[in-house]
Amino acid sequence: MTPPVSLRNHDIAELRRLDVAHHLAPQQDWQAVEDMGGSRIIVRAEGSTIIDGDGVRLLDGMAGLWCVAVGYGRRELADAAHAQMLELPYYNSFFKTTTPPTVELAARLAGLMGGRLQHVFFNSSGSEAIDTMIRIVRHYWQVQGQPQRQVIIGRVNGYHGSTIAGMSLGGMAPMHAQGGPLLPGFVHVMQPYQFAEGFGESEADFAARAAQAVEDAILAAGPENVAAFVGEPVQGAGGVIIPPAGYWPRVEAICRKYGILLVCDEVICGFGRLGRWFGHQHYGIQPDLITMAKALSSGYLPISAVGVADHVVAAIKAEADDFVHGYTYSGHPTAAAVAMANLDIMEREALVRRTAEDTGPYLAQRLAERLAGHRLVGEARSLGLIGAVEIVAEKGTNRRFGPGGKAGFVVRDICIAKGLMVRGVKDSIVMSPPLIITRPEIDFLVDTIAAALDEAEPALKAL
Ligand code: PXG
View (cartoon, rainbow, N blue to C red):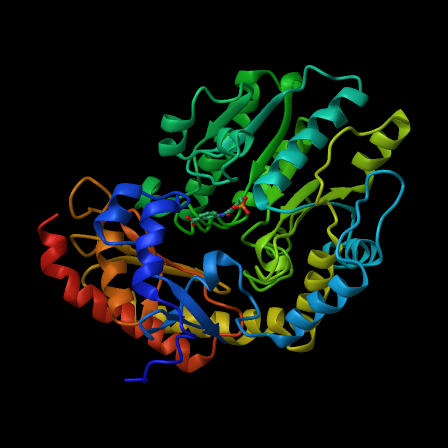
């Protein structure tokens, strides 16, 4: 056991009391937090390891919340923020002014996106990026003289943030149930989740069927009314849904056939997660817009962006009027400076190539060796450094323990008790570790999930 680290005089018991009394945590059951006596307080982190107030060390199999690509404790990022704050902590980009890091980051992202995606609009969060993307899409069709194109197609179980627009576009049933009425104009099609919805079907047939759902939705709405299709290259929060081969090229072709904008939400897949700078590059498709956040700054400061293709920007410029949208912190210089330093690290340490050629394949190999054959595992899948383990009641089927989609949470809690932070999503365990994760840490991650599954079996049978 590693000895407890310095607690820097945090009074953890008092913090937990105050947490219950005053802090409303996002996407949580506040009563459940109170019943457990307050949240676990994370006080420190280094590399791929987080450390809580009791000195317990956990391997962070989620990179924070899918974001801390370069790992924790990077002095370089703190130095970048420090230097920029002293020079110019903030200035806006609203009135024909802007700041050096803002422009430098836009140009750098244009280089990483490549192709037609040469323009960048900044925001602070993924949800804000989604709102910006919707505003640009709508404005684009207005200036194109087709203002009736208002329908935006998303997917069931897609996640696009928690603002009203983001959750309306997203397909999270619990969010829809609480957050209604949804904004009008959003339609949801089936997700390309073969394990749950195409079990036993050939991959090619399932890819064709899932893509056909997009075309059917376009035809149902009337192609002349459809503005865009939006999807995560790999659905993250929905449970790491890796689409079957052929799905994305088909969806792209369908969008082109009807002249509909193709949007990839790269908030999780962007910046190396799938082994390329952006997820759409892995699938060989060319979206008209992309959204990005999270690993853009490795979560050290909030910043997000929308990448926009030349032809979309050209159409809006031709209108010669203000695009009346933007946030106080759009292009925040300190956040942009930290993002630049973060990209410096990613490039210097070749984290994208390492994910594609070393750690990503190694994770896939370890999942195959250690988990795919486990009697409680229906499927263990990964792409780059994102993965999921499907928990099943009967090997060789996709039959679950109980109807409530709770198996993932049972196994997750045991993983945490064993020193591994992962997420449960319904009946699966999902992982998205920092891109700096090492092979021994990948071994620990996979071995811990296997041990947790063994230990969970009685509790799973009781579900
Ligand atoms: N798009 C995608 C694809 C996301 O994953 C957002 C947009 C919204 O980003 P912000 O920065 O506004 O949160 C996200 C965020 C989970 C979980 O439970 C995932 C996210 C956020 C919160 C929880 O896995 N992703």
